[in-house]
Amino acid sequence: MESREHPSLEGMAPGPGPGEAPARLGTRGRVVLGFFALAAAYFLWTEHRAHVIQFLPWGILALCPLMHLFMHRGHGGNGSHDSGRDTGGGGRES
Image 1: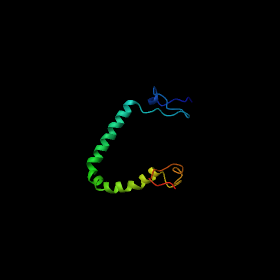
Image 2: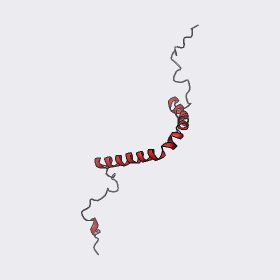
Image 3: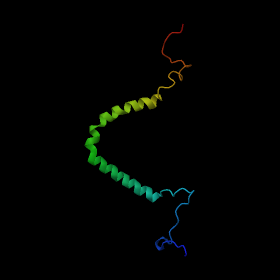
Image 4: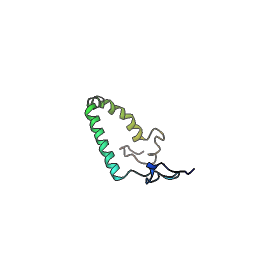
């Protein structure tokens, strides 16, 4: 018996091989994806605006611990980065 591909697959380009990466999304695909994302964002905003605005103050409060962690970079090594510098606090030297 002869091994033949399915007739509907004739003329189609083969997919990526075992060690190859799949093709990236082209410019047209990105534009279409962008329009779908904008449409989804619009409909989510118009349908759920009351819910989002209702919980906005709680969201801001929830961001406070995250800002603390990212701005202070955690609590490891407190005092190690300012150990040799003058802080300019206006104190007198003895």
